[in-house]
Image (tube, helix red, strand yellow):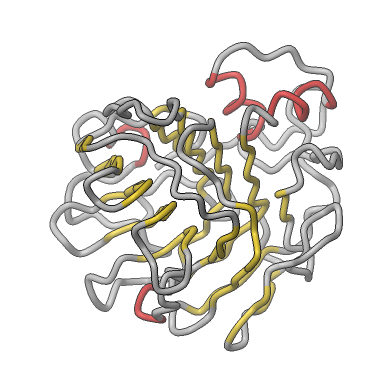
Length: 294
């Protein structure tokens, strides 16, 4: 197990001193939704950065354990995105899927935690070695968190995506894809608003998909807006790895300057609001906060 992460308070990797809490979800029925959001479209570049602390000591069933999703309610075919972990299926994987306009026009990527290529990064030793709170094999920071960063590079409408359109970084290191699917083309459905969900599938709000986890500093960047964050931090970044290093920050969340050009930053400091105001997520069924932050 990786036991030492850099939690520096020096000039390189500085932990956010205001990070005192994280979102807490019980895995039974806790989730959060944000409606009326502008749709993230498949022709743009999108980044998701999140700190996850799985709290489940074991997984009671094979349900897909949701981290985040985008959907129109009761319509999971248009501009539908899901990011989840699937344990207890003899595959032990994280999946990203973006359906532009039906399953025939979508991209799907999976990363098996225990594959030969990914095991040295995740710590999982195989398909049955799951990411749980009690599994000391899993590489986490000292507070039990894993940093996940998904980078999706879209293509123009009418063109096909490919198996390399999405990357996943685990604690700053690139994982190897173990399944890629490509079918159809990137299409614009005409939808203008949608719903985002944390720990739930916003298509139907099914609580069977809720995840027993803590989530800290969740950030979304679209259309290259991560460049504005880098500029605000005084960084000149060129590659995806540079941006991953910026957000991973040596093993702890860093302070992110407020800027309306990248509005989707959530630090969950006893609040579901994002850091520049506006419409917050709404919590359901007793969602709370924990001082066990990343």
